Length: 436
Image 1: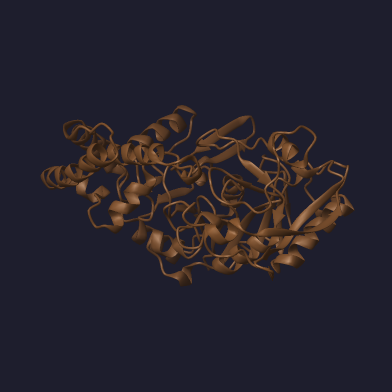
Image 2: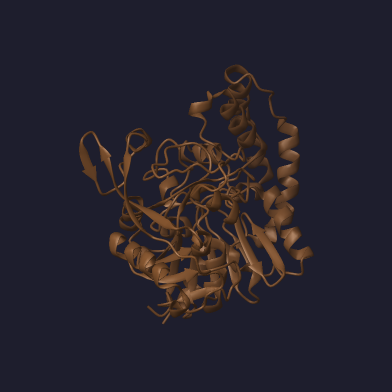
């Protein structure tokens, strides 16, 4: 019988989902992206090769694994084609194994122009930290029912008419409200129709393909992007991404019933990071040498895969993870980057917050409330030994085991996997998601 696993980030993204998806794909015949766009950044290390993926599912580096881009993903075809080219130049077979849903909303040049112009117009403390890739404006068009989708490309006359109407709207916004330059309709049309010919062989009914795969007894892995605390509904709004990043979106964003989602793996760093603006209760100083935050930043190589920006770093936040675990229905946790904490004399875990004279054990809803939270910390001993590359639970120092056990207790979710390095085999398995 087929077993399907959903992988989601439980923090503010950048938890190390790509490596774990690649590792789990050894037991899967298909990998599905179901939300987000090319603002996702998944880094995989296979031997001496490093792959940086934005749109193509992480399963592509495994021979014979089918990869699907579901209807919940907003698609920049130009970027997808460029990514495919890089992967093929690296020796990977991509086109024969990649299927793209015709229902994917298109990201077109005016979306990124709007994205950048809006962010530039904001005051410093109001900036979201968007990647400027047009993700948000594309989702806006989808919800406003004026967006163009992949299937529109294959009717050139209809596409041209729809494009003209929507570009008149967006160019008005660009020029009259944001003081930016308009985007050329003719250039967008020409490029889009040229891209259509290249992507046409990849377009297929992803929902139907996934259903048939499941019916045939094949295991599927649903690969989330970003993280739960950036979810448009459940994150620290408005400092969030523009899609639903939670496990339930795997059903809507791939076109399957929720009954096909059997296990939810929550990817969680052994500490916390965040890119861009927004509240971060357990944030630490990352610029002063010798401070724990500086070690997290430098040893953890905390720079955004997509943007290259420094990630903000902080102590592990159990109250935030409790919220994420409930929203996603997390079955088990995977803790990543444990080795980054090696050598710290003591560690702190945020167990809750003080807000308006009350103690909270769950992250509040909305950025304004989160920004006013004062973290409550529990202190436990650190360890001097290295955890890097450990492959068995017994290989971890006793204090590292105690740290992980405390996380399990506080969050009421079992830790099933511990990642101790970027390579596939640098992984401790306690319970396999496909066997659970």
